[in-house]
Image (tube, rainbow, N blue to C red; front, top):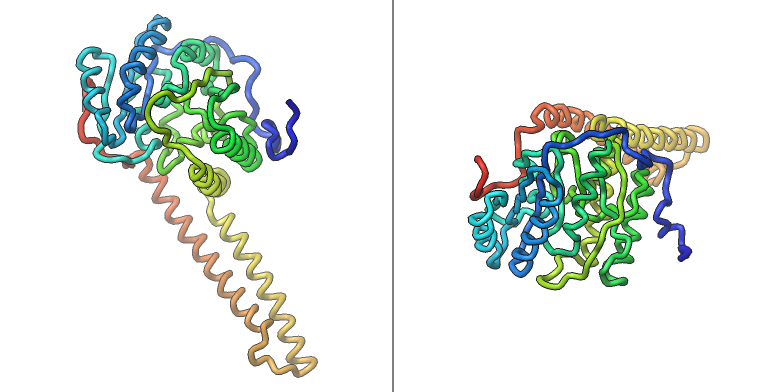
Length: 345
C-alpha cells in the first residue's frame, strides 16, 4: 500500500549505517540468555514459560531464562518463584521497586552468562517461536538481529499510527533506517552490552546505540499477537515520552563526548548577535546621537553577551562532567536488587 505522507515512509531519512544483506560468516554462540522484564503479568507467566522452553529446546544449546520482576504489585513474583523452583534454568531478579523497563532489562543483562542475549516482553505479544531463527541469523555473522512486527496486532489510532510517526522521526534524526525501533524482541551479542550505558528509558534506543558503535545488524519479520491477558503499559503518552527522549538521544550521539561543540557553537552564535547589535548601538549613538535609554538594541547586546558567557561556561562545565562520567563508567547501577533466585549474587 503506498504511503500518503513522507513522514510515514518507513525508510525515510538520511543515509546511515545500513543493514547487511548477509552475515560476515559463521560466528556461533555458546548459549542463549533470554531476559524478560515483568511488571504485573501474573496471567501470562505460566504460558510464557511454556512457550519459551519449547522454543529454546529447539536450539540445541544451553540456555537460561532471566525473569526480572520490576516491582509488580500482583502475584507475578510468587508465580516466578514457583517456576524457578521447578526449573533451574529460570533465574529471577527481584527489584526493590518499579524502576522501569530499561533498568529491568539492564538488571537481567548484567547477569546473563551466554553469548547471545534475547530481549522479549512478558505480555506474549511477541512469539517466542521466532527466537531460534533469530539466533541462527545472529550466528551467521551479525551483532544485532532486530524483530520487525510486520503484521502488528495493535489498535491503529492509539498504538500503530503514533508508533509509525515516532519511528519515522527517529530515523530522520539518527539516520538509522530500521523499520520497527519499538520492537522489544531482539537478539544481541553479549560483548556489545558492556559498551551501552542504559538508564531512564533508553531501552527504546538500544538498536540505535549499537548501530552507532558499528554493530552489524539486520531486521527479520516476526510474529505479533494481540494481548490476551493483563493490561498494556503503553499508550499515547508513551509516544510523547519517546519524542522527548529523542532529543536526549541526539545529544548523546552527537555531543556527549564533546559538549563544548554544542554549547560553544551556540555561545559563538550568541556572541555574534551581541557584537552585531553592539555595532548598531555604536552607530546609532555616535552617528545620529540617538538616546539609548531603554533602547531594545542595547538590551539585545547585553542579553546576548550574557547568554554567550553562560553557554561557554556551561560547555566548559559539561566537558569536566563528561570526563568524570567516563572515568567512573561501570561503577554504578540504576536499580536496586532485593533478591535473586538461581543466580550467584
